[in-house]
Length: 451
Image 1 (spheres, rainbow, N blue to C red):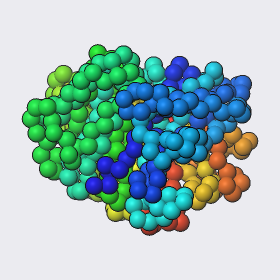
Image 2 (cartoon, rainbow, N blue to C red; image 1 turned 60 degrees about the horizontal axis):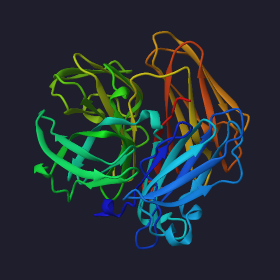
Image 3 (cartoon, one colour; image 1 turned 60 degrees about the vertical axis):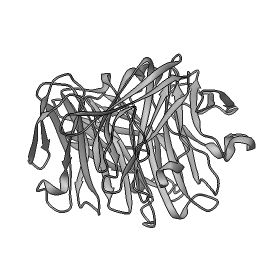
């Protein structure tokens, strides 16, 4: 099973840092690697330190970048080149990224063959935003967890961001029932628990083949986490949720039905204590509902079955009647490319995109910014290379798109951007894709953090 080859790592970010639950370093026999892109959100240069811990929580190596990142700029740290030779081909664990300045981080996971891990077979890509120490919590929610669901299986990674403690996993099906639990006892500080659902033996109950459900994770210690969903051809990665990220209303900036081959789905988890009804309203006017979604369980909204026009691309809002919810959006070019990102319960008048590209090792990016307020707003994007872009009069619940490969950046450019809104809060998502290749999963997505 390809998913078992993931050598995951959790990146913990301190006050001036960001937690990233998966970095990888492999070799030809286990070809998983990762890059951590760090953006300096400050007005002064930032010195970066990365501490690597194994799955038991033991510090393996500390990397200090001797060249500070300039204010407003970003830098990619390719894990195999910053780990010592003794660990570069076998590391599996977690990491802490820190700085004396305010920073944000993105992690890209890569698998493939060849020196640059860019040759078939098994090209898989996944990305997610880092998790700040203040965003860790004693309870986490995982809206999408699967076992042999249309060939997809989940790998769940949870890191202990505090003192030694037990970590408890509770699994829910979409009928609202709690069907299984798993307990990891005495997990050390900085250590990670990695669950492969296709082989997991729960502590109680069972997880049936074909399972598509959700998970609630609890501990006496603060936690951070991420999830990989993988069918051996494509990989969908997202960071899991703390309760503070939930809301009665959620915002989804990009959903698709056969849009340049892509389709999408929204899976919504009830993180409250009572059942709730869900209403999803799309920008093309279509409305879909799910009633009686039980506490802890989730509901799936699959755009190709909802009546959207072929070739449609739009946005959506999710409203819950009685309980807070969280949601993950899965994007899929079936059998070719895939990614995931998190719906948001709100936004800010300023967000940051730490990793943007134009023909950077073949990758281009698209930035989608959604107005999550109640009044129209103007959106400005300021790039680290000095260029800028804007969109005016973006209506509530609508999105504006910015394609970096059309904006005049130098070929090979890699940088960051600050997105500002004049009158309403916004949230943003970045899609990274090698548009010229379809011989593997050449796509990532991540949520843009708030500074």
